[in-house]
Image (tube, rainbow, N blue to C red):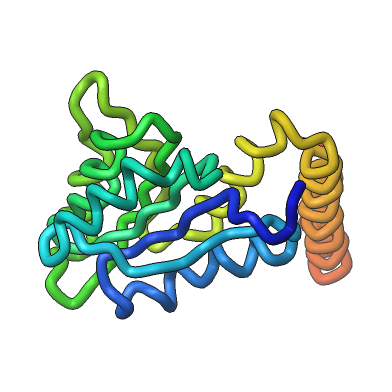
Amino acid sequence: MDATKPLVGIIMGSDSDLPVMKQAADLLEQFSVPFELTVVSAHRTPQRMMDYATHAAERGIKVIIAGAGGAAHLPGMVAACSTLPVIGVPILSSNSIDGWDSVLSILQMPSGVPVATVALNGAANAGLLSIQILATSHPSLAEQMSLYKKELQSKVAEKVKGLKNQYPNHFDGGTH
């Protein structure tokens, strides 16, 4: 994997989305996956969005993570203009209705224009999903992902142990 050539594009409708989208960037950095990060608004800069979506693959991008709040058209419009997998991150923004408008705008794509959708403000999972997609053709990423999942298991085991110590008379002791 060429560390200088971005494999993942992280785009957002506004820089106010950065605190959420940073979660994806942080995970990509943790896994040493090269990425680019920019603002691309479906409504305010439609030509920029079209150019980004139509030229991302030829620049070497393999996955696009698109975050948007409110009407949240960015992920779907990018998916309509690109053959790359697009992961949509619905964002609870200041003009959002509890985030449901963003979730449904990204989730309810018409047949033929898929967008993988993560939870509201779930950019961390978008980062992980992009890594899993890339891991299908990068064995080193598959190994790193396996280790990451084992770390998650270890963290849960430690929490179980803590609960058992805190409530010894009420712990079921099972493996389920």
